[in-house]
Image (cartoon, rainbow, N blue to C red):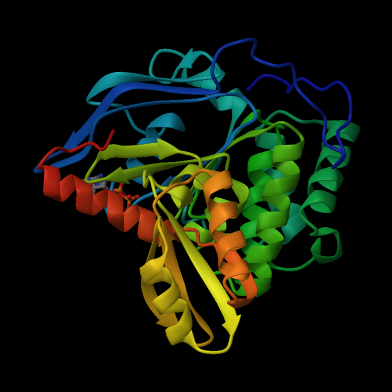
Length: 340
Ligand code: ATP
């Protein structure tokens, strides 16, 4: 491999390589991959702009790993094309490897090595030498909070530490694009928070991150957009915010009140634009037949004017899991593999 490019230092102390210009960070065009008896990926297309963090979401067997492996140059498409930093993954794999960091869902077990030996081994394989190698490993260990564990055997690492080590290995050559396959799988809540923090830092440095996970709520917090894949097909690509809002032309509002829920229900029955949906412990959910802020505000004003003692009034967002299930339901109902 070529010597990695280094220039200025970033917040985490890692060197920043030159940008690949104006090409999308990832571009997938009509990509398909079939194995004997299995159509794992079916004609998918999507683009990821530099600096974006994209969540890749789908059930077991949906085609996430297959797509990511093709992007990481570890497998070939059956048809279609994929580009990373403008380089074709089939015709220019070496260029692609230079600009990606790949973190597989399972990393090799090198239990007999220490953290430092492991990173040193891969840094040498990447072509780092002398002082530069020592510096780079130190930076990566600092970024992934492994400095204090340099001499610990990999066998003795917790799952979270192991995942940080695997991420550190993927960062050694300071790639522009990171492809992380289920990095949070099996982590406890604390290790998840740590991992999320690292991904946020990488995003702040302008890295492009494609990250697969089943944990939608976590992806929503850290991703610019979510790419849903089902049975090998991309069924939705949009921001977490737009998914939470949905396509509905109505607003679901959670209202907390002091006093009788029956009063809120009776009031809603008599109020234009409002439907009482269900009672909750100390209030209810009402639906307003508009998403216009002015209409929502006028409903609240009327509620107060009419003597309902409101203590909380907020828009209820759909959970991302619900959005995903809803999109799957729409697909089944329409008989079409896509949702517009
Ligand atoms: P998971 O969340 O369980 O990791 P995934 O979305 O990553 O699932 P893939 O691993 O891409 O899904 O698998 C997609 C489909 O392709 C599955 O039906 C899988 O069994 C099949 N598949 C993947 N790799 C191969 C292979 N090398 N040979 C045969 N079938 C394969």
